[in-house]
Image (tube, rainbow, N blue to C red):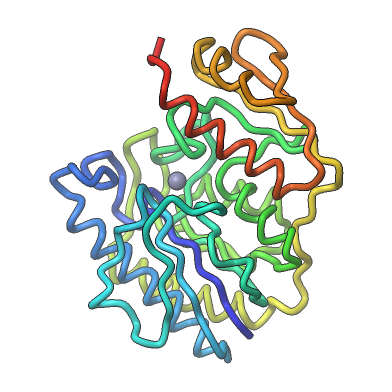
Length: 274
Ligand SMILES: [Zn+2]
C-alpha cells in the first residue's frame, strides 16, 4: 500500500494560535517540531500496518514547515510552492490511501481551532451544494484519482466534519476546541501515540473504504468575506456573481473546480480587506 500524507499545522496537538501557525510567530519553530513529530507518528503507524511507500506533502503556508532532518528517513517529501494541487500536490502520482494530518475544520465552524478555508478571505465553499473546507477539498481531489481518505487528525471539530462527510474514516482528536484560538490539549507524547495507533488502524481498513467522489459536472459556490473579492474574481470567465459576496461557476470535474477555486484564493489577495 502506497500512502500519501498531507499535513497542515493548525490541527497539530498544542497548536492553538497564530503565534504557532504564522512563520513570524514566536512559537512557530516549536510548532514545526510538533508537526514533524505527528507526521513521523502517522508514518510509523502506516509502516506498521504494511505500507510499502509513504510520501508527505508539507501543506501549510508556502510548504516549508517540516524539519527535514528529523523526518522519518523512509518518506519522500513534497515541499515548496506554488503547486497546482496545493495541499494535495503529489497525490496524482498514484497512491492507495490518503492521510490528512493536522487538519482543521472549515471556515465559520464554532469552537474549532484556527478554522479557515485556504485563506481568511473565504467564508464558505460548496461542491454541488455540499459545504466543504480543506478536509472536503483534499478528499475530493484524492477521490478524483480514485483514492480514499483513511485518516484525519486534528481537533474534535475537524474529526466531526471528516466523519460527517466521509463516513467510516478513522479520526484522531488531539485537542478539544474551546474557541477559535483556544483548546483543551493533550500532551505532545499522548498526541503522537494516538496518531501512531490511529494511522495503523486506518491503513488496516483502508481497502474497504470508498473514495469521496463528487458528481460531474461540478457546481462550485464560493462565499467571500468582502464584496471587493467578488469584484476581482468575476474577471475569471464563467464565474458569476450570485449576490454581494458569493459567486458560482460550473466545472467539468472536481479538478477543474479546484483550479478555479485556487485561482480565486490568489486573486483575492490583490484587493483590500474592506
Ligand atoms: Zn489549513
